[in-house]
Amino acid sequence: MGLIPKTGRRSWKVRLLHGSMFLILTLGAVSMLAPFVLMLSGATRTGVDKHEFSMIPRFLWEDNALYRKHVEALHNESAATLRAAWRTDLPDFSGIELLPSVDTEEVARWEAHLADWPIAVLPGYAATPESRSRPLNVRGFARYLKSEISRDIERVNEVLETDFADWNAFLVIPPDTRSRLNLTTDTPWWQAWGHYVHEVAPEWTLGTHDLTGFFHERVWVPRHGRGVPPPLLSATIPEAEREAEAWLLFVREVVHPDFLRISDSALGDWQRFLQARYVNLQTLWRATGTEVDAWEDLALPARWREADPFQADWEAFLQGWKDPDEVLHRAAAEHLTLDSADLSWQREHGTPPPIREAGQLKFERHLPEIRRAFLTQHFSAVWEILIVDGRGLGNTVFYCAMAVLLALIVNPLAAYALSRFRPPNAYALLLFLLLTMAFPPMVTQIPVFLMLRDFGLLNTFWALLLPGMAHGYSIFLLKGFFDSLPRDLYESAALDGAGEIRMFWMITFSLSKPILAVIALSAFVSAYTNFMFALLICQDESMWTLMVWLYQLQQSYGPGVMNAAFVIAALPTLLVFLLAQNQIMRGIVIPVEK
Image (cartoon, rainbow, N blue to C red; front, side, top):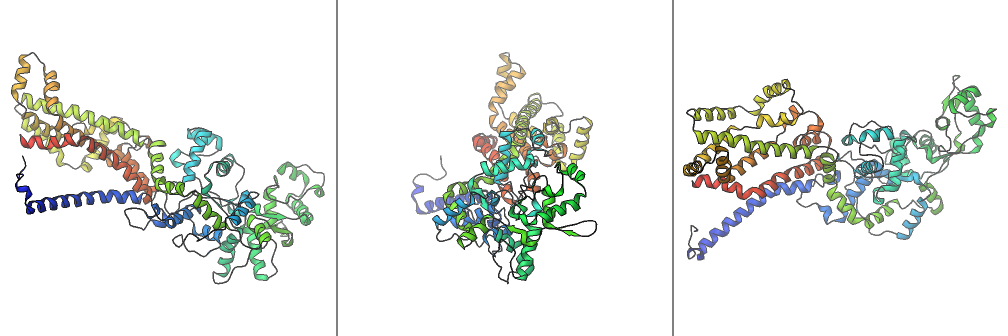
């Protein structure tokens, strides 16, 4: 029966009291849920919106916010790459806005023009130096290798000639295909990456390089600053002295040789260069496997890709090489030509290529996929790290299950013996058990570690389970509950011939489900949140639990991944509480009533 009768509840004062109570409880519930909602929101953040503070991420309803995140990921979180691709002076990604309109016909012509220029592809969603996550295309490449080669990382290392310790150490540093600093050879690894980029990666994760913007960002701005208007990049050396110096620096030392051609007019210089470099034909044969009868029989490859086995020589001829007599051999400036998709478009149309417009149109075509990718990317990364590629979930499930099982066997048996048989030193034993709680875990960890080490149990589940198998407070709580059970039940069962084990199971266990639920939840929470001790005694990665993994994640990943990991780690305790809340409340209320 309620404290206030039905007639009294009709009073406006009572109704006001009830309303106030419900309002306070509702505000309390909201205040408890707010941190969880903030973690959910934080789990979708990247570099461009990491400083925003809102319960619901803006990109879920605002296309401009989503576009900024997409452009940031498309350019691998590098503002310099963005400036080079768009020919802009934007300092970061925060000022990006969608264009009011896009010429779809011009974009279609540009996309058809790009079909002959695969080198112009910019693999986006492949690096996250700002948000420190596991990019979408890196995870996709790992899945591709697992399906095409093997899930065994050792087998992948063997096939691709790599040396990854495990899948969680898997990393791709996407090469800058514009720069000479990132010359990639035709190794199995880069062949597999190239195939993934061109054949498997989602279309909307690939951008386009712009050689003119790259020239501005890498050569013109560092030499002359942003206050001097940059010239358009020309295919051949310009006439103006200042522009010619910048062009030669760009061509000889900066740009990837795939964008260059050396005309046949430089054939004589090429042959003299090889003769100075190799001295005699026999040395040339041994170094390159090319057998010719005279230096004049050597042809000059027009492109770097066609120069095998002379690619290193071709690059040295382009940049310049001095022989032992300090004579400089290199291709003359008038024999060099830049050739790229944007320069070709510029020559044909007289305008810069619509790279930004094409990217925006692609974004609009794939809007739902991009929004879904940013909503789930950090959760997917955590899932793969902890569960698919790691053993964190399996270890934690087994550890928690065994901890709960042992807690429901050892503690009730000990409490039953003290309650049922009532030895004369029962309270002394209880006091001794409770005294163990006076020492913080940090004090006991070192002696327990030394003992487990001497027993040879480190990096095993026994090392996790044995130290916490019996708990003094649980035994004390259970004994108090067992003492409140009617003694007549045990006497009647004994008269009927029941043994102690049967009475323990049929009477004590059956009547103690609420308090046992409390003990089980306590054991689960203790095992699930066990971090420091688990890290100390199980340093082998294959034995890490979720809590240890969370600590290790923060060493390598950013706030977005960590928030996603916290959300995933919070779900098991929430589900356990929701499923067991009735038994838990009975375990709290019944002893008080008794």
